[in-house]
Amino acid sequence: MDGVTAVAGRRAVVMGGSMGGLLAARALAESFDEVVVVDRDVLPEESANRRGTPQDRHVHGLLARGRQILEEFFPGMTEELRAAGAVVGDVAGDVRWIMDGVPISKGHANLLTVSVSRPTLEAHVRRRVRGLAGVRLLDRTEVVGLRFSPDGQRVTGVRTVQTGDAASGSTLAADLVVDTLGRGSRVQRWLVDQGWPEVPEENTPAGLTYTTRHYRAGPQPSPADFSVDIVATPDYPRGAVCARIDGGVQVVTAYGILGDVPPADPEGFLDFLKSLSSPEIYEAMVENEAPLDDPVSHRFPASLRRRYELVERLPTGLLALGDAVCSFNPTYGQGMTVVALGAKVLREHVAGGQVPDPAAYFRDLARDAVDEAWRQALCNDLGFPEVTGDRTPEILAEQEHMGRVLEAARYDGAIAAAYTRVISLVDPPQALHADWVRKALRSD
Image (cartoon, rainbow, N blue to C red; front, side, top):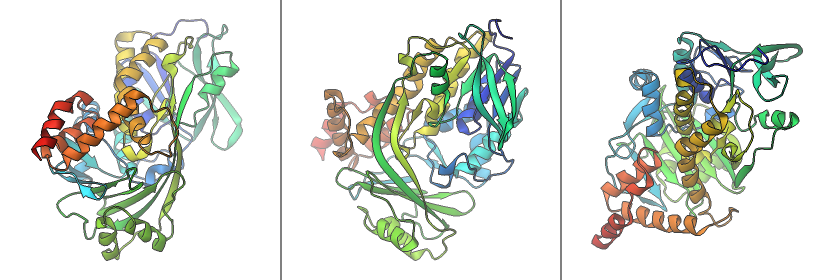
């Protein structure tokens, strides 16, 4: 294949078999005869924790926009997950949001969201992807490098080894390679080794640690709601989520920033919950005498964005998606939804048998999938005075505006619902226009 122009409609290789890789495979399957998803883990048929996704034990958010895209890619997925025990409800009407100790007003956003464990969600998506014509999941196989054309201008495949066997090297040829290896991807280093420019990066250090414990479904902090979210704020920089998920389980994830670590011993974990701005989750967990495991912690040092759209020269035959491009502060629950948005961009750029132009793809990925989520996360992160970063006039103005929005949302259910639609990446930020917010505050 070396020296031959890539043509969509033959073989695509996806590096990584988590949600990013699975949704990339779904997008590519419409335009390629063969799609091979390569992952170093065993990719089980059933719901199971995997080494490659150590964060999968913690609470996961699938924003309403992400659920909509999953339903578009896999019709009937919402009901399939509900039948498997997932909890489905309105993102505003069935979730209790608490900020600075005060619940925001109840509204109805007319947006369904799904509360489900990450392993169960991934298992159902994986089963659907396995059933796609031409898609093959190649597990227990690790990508160790890229294959280039003789002139070095085009990626023509990947070099692999069987997991745990460095001597088992082989090459898998491809017309298109998609990197979904996450924030730890080595693709940038491989490109530099071939003489390509470095991809600029942006970091926002959050120093986040979150700790999770699972319980049998017992007393609910707010019986009418399937999830209670005590949001960390600059005045109360600790938070927690308590959500009902599949399997008759209640998951509690507590988090702290900038080195504030929720303890991983049972007593310390409860003490941390007791210290939050609202007592609701703590009181419910004290009453729940059926913990299913010990608390477990995971660290997230910083939000990371690789600015592929700013690179002047990129090889053809190589794209990237998901955390390999942008890894968000997980407390905002944006990651899987941005992956789904990115998969739609990928599908558009390979449609009709066209050869994807990497520069055009990454520009569209930034505009249509990443920019708004990154803007929201950056404004939130930089609201904490200890977090370092450039607080531009635009960011300061947005922080001031959102402060008014959240104040108004305490009293106005319509504004609360509109706020959840914006942070769910369904409506644009302009939906929360300043005149409406000022009127709501004056009428209080």
